[in-house]
Amino acid sequence: MEPKDFVVLVDEYGHDLFDQDGRLSTMEKIEAHRYGLLHRAVSVYIFNDRNELLLQKRAVNKYHSPGKWTNTCCTHPSPGESPLIAAQRRLGEEMGLVATLTEAFTFLYQAGVGNSLTENEFDHIFFGVSNQNPNPNPAEVSDWDWITIEELKQELIRNPDEYSHWLRQCFSKVVNYKLQEPS
Image 1 (cartoon, rainbow, N blue to C red):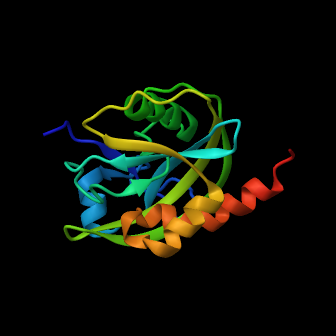
Image 2: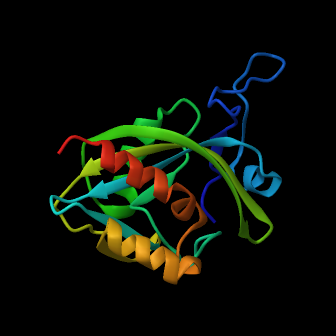
């Protein structure tokens, strides 16, 4: 069992919540998912120079959404850790990559993810560019692939259950953001 991870509870605008004594409101990650409480998260989307997105397939031992394809990596910032630092940390831990990341947008999502758990997250979305293939941590990632946006769009239509809830809910926002980027 891994050490207890704590998440930061937030409101629907992404503002940290504080208890009656003025302390930052945190909760053990698994408990936040059991109770479905809104908390801060980050998701990273790495593209290469061919504009392909790096996807990972979650390891089968993950406590939720095992074996699902999803974006490059995700995590929850620890109390006192910025979303950017958390995103950079997790990109290295999960995928063995280092890349310059830029926060693209935020979005709220909620979804049941099995095992009586609910993701209820204020998600900071980061984009980055890398042409390196990953060296993933097998405890976190069972497979990976580069895929075009159009291919992923078709896959999400044909096989939605093969993909994480958050990727499916965020995909149109990722596409819209990419369309607005200067070429």
